Length: 88
Image (cartoon, rainbow, N blue to C red; front, side):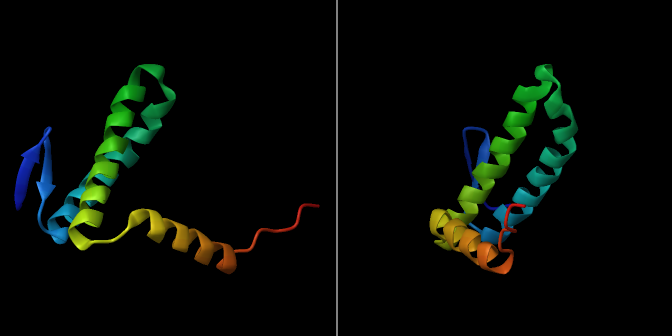
């Protein structure tokens, strides 16, 4: 892995390394989701979700992708591809 530690999280210089770690963290977050219903576990689940967000933001930084613009464009694309059904 290439990168430097920052607050216990490795700040990657490579999009590939950040993507690998993002995948690992997403898997951990997915596994912990069944615990999200238990109040005592919510902080642990929140930590896992935050890890996913941190690595995603690092990937965006390394690649120069504006995540907000990418998300807005993707939502618009999805709306065209999957239009909402009219209410009955």
